[in-house]
Length: 276
Length: 260
Image (spheres, rainbow over the protein chains, first blue to last red):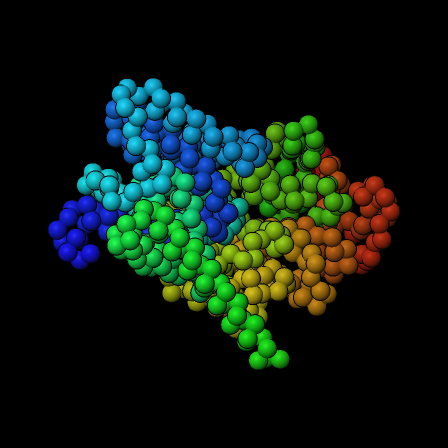
């Protein structure tokens, strides 16, 4: 594999994308898990499919379309949530299927032979282009800067937005911004594991890290590292076994999660028995 | 005698859909005093606190905090808010000391700003006063309900607010911790204006300067002695009253003048 990395640009792109994606997963995934926004993230990812279809139809980069649709839907959810009493859960359900339906419609309208949608639905990290990589790099650096630079404010906002509002922090802006960040990171992840598997990549590294720490900052760092180790291992395995990389990474993640939880439960019961 | 008012509400109406929660609330809450808000469930007590903090915008009416707008008061750190501890996600991964430090945050966006040494020292001082210094590294989920309540009070106090608003700080807390909380409020905040929503009728006589009774409409009594009639009016049904020995003062609502 080292040879492949040195010789082939697509392997270098894949490797860098996996590392970038893990950082995003660690940071945004932790927020998504702690604020229970998992379903919403799934909804945004599927709405992005509409944008991918639009890109194919009108002939621009599909990832740009995904970016527009993902940010649009996240801002829509956030603003409707503020204005009406419509259950966010219901709203996500509506957007989820509408986005998919639009995607199918646009692809049907596209002239010529239908494009290969599997790489967007299930992800194919090996087809990441230099252009994709530059977009991903920009998004990751942006997310990283915004979260790290204002970490104490984010922590206060995530813990108790009402109190943050009362002491003068602009929580409406932070709310919109958070949804925007989630949308941006979902677009990054679509290239790695695809629309359908995004949720696993956002949640599992944090779920594993939660077994190890009770601190939001450490959760973000540990889940980033776990994500990196597992996605690089998955990439390596998929290269040798010739298995789709997205599926391999997800299976490894959930496998590690189940092994860790059983081990921790066993350790706990043993500790309890000893202390008796 | 002209007295300074911490909070002035005039003809404030709040409704959720077709349901009127607060109607024509006109009340002046005196500064540097401890005022209790009592009333039945669904009487709009929490809503009133949220109106005063700016979290709920009233449909009509005016609200002044020390003669200024709420947004001005918020942005200058005049308000300390202690929400109900029971509503919190106890599993949120954050430590005690960090929660208290959150109170020092301001509107300004300064990148990579960390808490200063003075802010940390102040947090330690407050934690010591609250008897939580040893627990400062704990995750909030590892605290008892009373301890978490005290952490939230500490978070509001570190700001040195002009007004402290507490929403049922003693709900589902044992008597000892309850008294401790009231004593802390009494000792730490000699000149602060404090407004507490409470069901704790027993504490009213011993700790509070005045009482406001709220059930959609307000029945404000200044420091007037609570009578069984007033309580019945507020709750709509007889309630046991254990208040006694409160100095007798009269407060005229319509003129907004406070006199002894």
